[in-house]
Image (cartoon, rainbow, N blue to C red; front, top):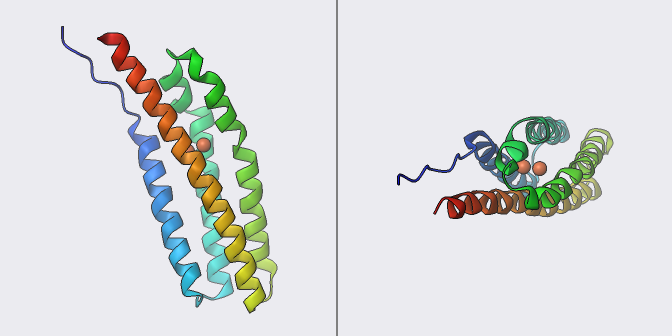
Length: 146
Ligand SMILES: [Fe+2]
Ligand SMILES: [Fe+2]
């Protein structure tokens, strides 16, 4: 019997890769410590908009719904991940607001670096957990067809 290849949700994986690249670029600009405050503020606000769109795709699009339709035992894990989204948007709101309003000083750089680092660590874990969840859903699909 011909094995049907699992459906890979290319868009979501593309988005995860894109966001990883974007975070790396911002981290590099931040660690160089030479960009004007307005440039940093614009990077963080752009990041916030892009991540908000990504969350919309995950919540409203076919990501969790399509992939997990046949795997109800994974729904709780999926819902736990979706419930983390507002806290990440709040962290990004803070970051934008500090970046836009603070004085360009050593303390300001330290503060945005700390906020960004904390966001990046937690968000990267979130994205990794989503990738693992997807992988679990897909491997169970393939296993079920054996
Ligand atoms: Fe997510
Ligand atoms: Fe995601």
